[in-house]
Length: 496
Image (cartoon, one colour):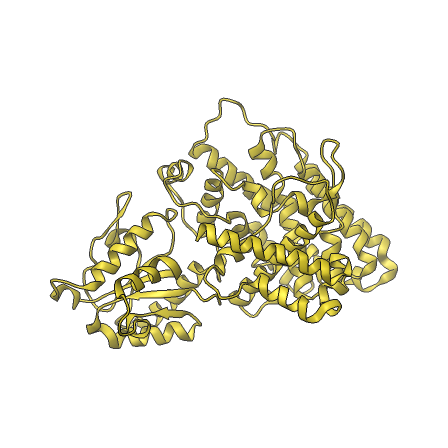
């Protein structure tokens, strides 16, 4: 996991119980910040604690017992004041602030803003009594979600597609196995992909179902946000049936299967690349092709089948309004779907729903008006949730899946940067960078640096180069990853 920590706020009378809680959290691979472990003689303890809360905590866990009520003063109140200030700057429903009771006690009613208080608005864990073990387990899961290691709840259509594929004798799985194993069936394979993409492209080109213009009288309010989220859900449902086939092709496909995969991705990407209309909707229309790109990338990386990743990314060319043909991955990405300004509020509403929270109209309005904290990578976070059930069998657990997803996004960003470095014809905005930027914001070394070190050490033997990525040239891969490393560093410095 990343080096971000769980900050535990407590009073010294409860140290024995906190020792037990800390052991459980560390057993789950969390880094715990406690004053008794982290403060040294001579430290400016107020500054150290403030930095630990604001600068590096993925979760602030406030633990209470009846011992607190016996005190007239406590440093815990100072910690809670800092935490409340920090919480007010976060998105509505953010799972950063958590509470736990160590016995039957009252939780102080700290003001958290927007009518919220610590005791009434934050769901607590009761770490005592017969349910203590179960409550500690639930707390661990909640912290895993907050730290980005556990995905949210995917759409029913994606869960069903994954469940159907997991059944013995699945028609989808068995048919593809036959097509991929038998090189004499390449014509059938081509027809299979043609049948797979046809209904997707047909639906995407239906301007009644997916209009690209918004009436000038439309307000940028909660209603617009809910319709935007609903449209993303419609895209998810439309593409859901293709995710398992794309996964299997990217994992087990060979050179004979590359051309039709590239063609499929290109046809969908070309339809997704629309410039005539309202920017908000034309940008959103890129999402289905981005989702399909991620689905193939995860499969290729899981099996180190990098020639199929090249076929699904660097080889997929699109054109728009007379511009030269460019790789789709250069012109689009998770960031380009929602932009980097006000419309991040729409993506934030989507992410909150993924986590089982339903933001109110007031909360959405606050996000739109910049008064609520917006997620910086909401589409990346949503893709992480969408693809989790599809790849459940490929990874040992949520943490392994999260780490693999980070590597995929770094590699996609590097492929995009490489394509930019090979041409002088593209000057558009950058569409990539994902959740790995915030997940590793306090790490001593992010996944982009790990990957850069790998190619420097392995040279031409680096596996992605053997698959034809970066033209097979170590120098190109190094230049692209250095650009990604610099970008990630600038993002982390500016935002966190």
